[in-house]
Structure formats: C-alpha cells, structure tokens
Length: 289
Image 1 (cartoon, rainbow, N blue to C red):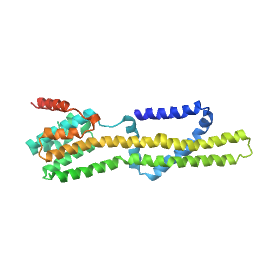
Image 2 (cartoon, rainbow, N blue to C red):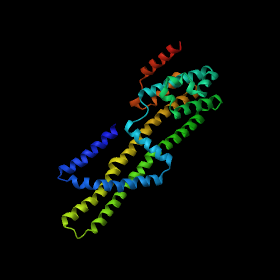
Image 3 (cartoon, one colour):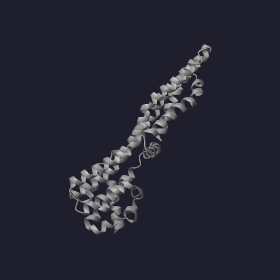
Image 4 (spheres, rainbow, N blue to C red):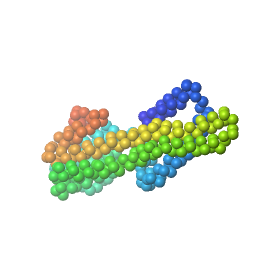
C-alpha cells in the first residue's frame, strides 16, 4: 500500500504546487487524454516489442506485488525455521523417514503444517532437491553451498525480469514525451495563422507531452521498478535462510544450532527472537510426544 500512497502524494504535490503557483489545469486536462494515448500507447507497444510473453506476464504479476508488498512475513520465517528443524531432525534419525516427506511434500504431514511454504514451488524445490541430493551422498558443505548459491542466483535473475523491463520502459518515457511534444508543435505550426492566445494554448498543450513523459518516468514507472526489485530482494532472503540452515546441518551441527544459524541470517525487521523460536520448537516437541 505504500506504493499507492507514494503515487498519490506525488500527484498531489506536483499538481497542487502547479495550481497554487497560478497554473491552470484546464490546459493539462484538455491535452492529457491525447498525450497519454500517444506516450502510454507507444510505451506499451515498445514494451511488447522488446519482451516475450513470459516477461509480460511476470511484469503484470510484479505490479500486483508492488501493491501487496513482500510475500514472506515474520511468521513465515519462523515457520521455515520450524520446518527445517523437523526435517533435519528426522533426517538425523532415519533417511527412510525423511525420504517419504521430500518425495511427496504435498502429502507430507510436516509440510502441511506450513501451507504457505508448501504452496511455494521454489521453497519446496530447494528443500526437497537438496535433502534428496544429500541422501545420495552429495554432502560436501562447500559443494552444496555453491550449488544452492547458483540456484538462488537463477531464481533472482528470473524474478528480476519484470523490474528490469519496467526500468527500460521508464528510461524510454522521456523520449516518447518529446515525440508527443514534437507532434504537438507540428500541429501548432499548421495553425500559424491563428491568434496568439490560440497558439499559446496549442504550444502549452504540446509541452504537456514532455511533462507527462518525464513525470511518468521519474515519478511513477521508475520508482515502481525500484519497488519491485526491492520486494524480490527481500523475498530472496527467505530462500537464503533455507540455504544457510541446510549448510549448517552438513557441517554436523545439531538441528537446533542449524536453526539458530538460519535465524541470525534473517533481516532484523523479520527476525524472530531466540525465545520465540525456542517456544516454537518446544511446541513441536509437545505435538510429537
């Protein structure tokens, strides 16, 4: 919601300041539909030319994320730590016991305790594929960490295409605004015999194109791309938590220590306290008893 609030503040301050300074909104409002059609239509068309269908879909999805905010909340990080504790503890006890959970996470009683995590394809894939590889004796901590790092880089790259595409659109909007302004000047020159007050309004309308292109680029689309990139960076930390916990397990630490290593790698704003995790793990033990 902060994105919507930011856009509202930007619009209010820009146009409010213009009106307070004595500007007339009539000229802008009269030209706005045509200029927006030229600039916005050209921007969308260029966007479709430069990107494939998967990028277009990803970008549309990312715009929704910019409004909703990061996917993973504080309680999700705590849930991930509890999930990893249960799986790592079970893996220490018996490879056969944990194998049934990683081969069929949809039917796993452990995974179903954490439905939001179980519904995330990337998180489930990282957990299950890595533990499966470990059970097949691919258990060198450095090699596993390197593999997971590359996997996270791939996920980050795939998630970043929408923000990158929007940023490219933002970079092109000022130029498209100039295109609209030039078309307005051409229209004005064709009416050079009109009275000065009419020509003044026509020139003012043409300049709306330049204004709109720059405003959309630096006031809306560019910040939106930055917001999306920031959200994806925050969500990536959730997968990094899984990586750190698994690598700690391969270094032969106890599951509780692995969970603590993971907890300390959570950003401070979402990091559950040591006491909260301790209570959550005690609750798991009571359920298992």
